[in-house]
Image (tube, rainbow, N blue to C red; front, side):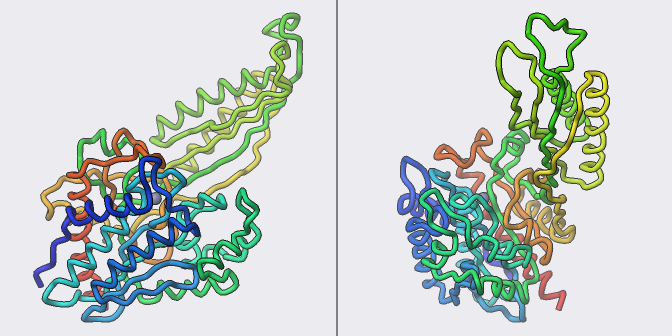
Length: 414
Ligand SMILES: [Zn+2]
């Protein structure tokens, strides 16, 4: 079978057209469940209609388009068309419009694909309006009970249930989207990196090995309030001083382990300039793509916290906030993705994703791999988000080659 070639120039022109329709100088306006989102999907549906494939929306609002194959089951290719408010022209959309191009290439080919090809546009990946991301993909994988979202309200007091129902999604039956994965052999997603790592390597494409795990906790430090002038330094129990040392120690440990440590919120109480604080709360977010290294990092940070607080005469208490384990992608598909890069004449970077994507929940049930293209200066979720056109074209080419080898691989699995 001579596999059809996905043409990145068509994807770039589609991206620009969609940006004109649903964006502008202020950035992308495709927040899930909004008019802009529906307009984008209407446009996508019109493009798909020209390929004579079957377009449906599942009970969670995921848009699916199927091109039948020679054998049963299907390979899924996709991402999300929704954006954050004033978002970029590539985040999510790149993966959906590249999937459109892969379908288009196969629809124009002389033979049908070895197994079916399914485009998927996951609903509400960003969670921009209700603060919870990955709605459609997590519902389809059964990791989330959609009814948990029913009572969430947006800034205007509109409930998630109302907003979804305006778009034809009934939360009471949304879990039926689990059937959308029946028959899925694999899931492929091309996305911009949204960080600066790939750009620094000088490579055009990265094969993504998985998503990093997260351990996010608030550290409550309690010392003793004292007078800023009258209390000598060696007689203080200052929780802010302890926090500063903890920040330094945890950052060093993260560097040693190849992970990240972020302290996005630090608050001193009572927060008066002439008082040595009585309490200090620090949110510590630790991430690593490997579970053992993540656990090791957490243990080492805990030991550092205990030692520093002991020295400082400060009491420490952790309150869990949120955590998720690292999610590794499928090693067979990672190999196919590397081979697809070679096939396209490109040397890929190989990296884990620090950010979560729809591919993370999907990978729990379906063999999955992702590809990244670089983000200029690492900027995303902003109207200035950008990627060189040559990189976009390279990414699409690799995705097309990967889709072809995955379709053949899936056919051999039967
Ligand atoms: Zn995205």
